[in-house]
Image 1 (tube, one colour):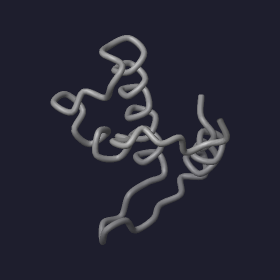
Image 2 (image 1 turned 180 degrees about the vertical axis):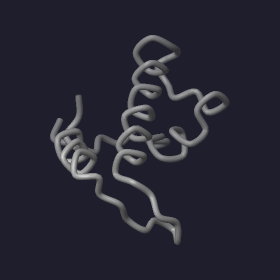
Image 3 (image 1 turned 120 degrees about the horizontal axis):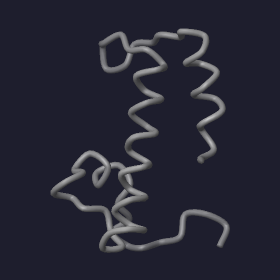
Image 4 (image 1 turned 45 degrees about the vertical axis):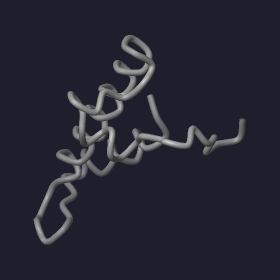
Length: 75
């Protein structure tokens, strides 16, 4: 699915917790949020308009939008 999946799954299985912005969260919560965000972006881009829908997925838009359309990988 994505590069972080194996690491997130291991931390999730270990019931790892951490402090994030002063709040204790579990690796499972973060892992599930990441998977959901990636799936939302995939759905918007591949099955939707070709862009992240800022109105429906504002958090994903803020995190993943690439306004300059610059390649950020080895293309």
